[in-house]
Image (spheres, rainbow, N blue to C red):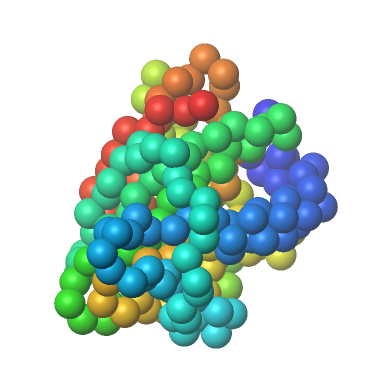
Length: 193
């Protein structure tokens, strides 16, 4: 199925999915805490993009698929790359500032598509590359051109992190791994489930 055709057909579904995923992601994940220290808080972004602190969630990620190093101490840990029955693949993880000072999220992470960039900082520049199938998959967009990914990213304080997600068209079931690429970060290979 053509990606552009899928966007049109699934426009209404995508809008509902982004709302559900955003609610789910906002409550997911917590950083592992040493027993002797007070619980750390995690940073999330508000609609204005300012980092805020949320209490940690009891839900811990099961595994780490990849850890990507970016610029200025940013690190993206990917915990899941799951297919769903609707033909989508959702990548979930945490974006963390490992530096000792606040870091502004690079605008390049949004990609360079005018329709995506006009909706503010996001992870809209992420792609999946299926080398065997010779295809590149871009983050899905809703009918208004908003990327189906964490958005309103502005900055992260030192040591802070935020849960993130990106939704793509799912590669064929025969594709078991893809190269994940996000501007300003090193690429990584993801095993798909």
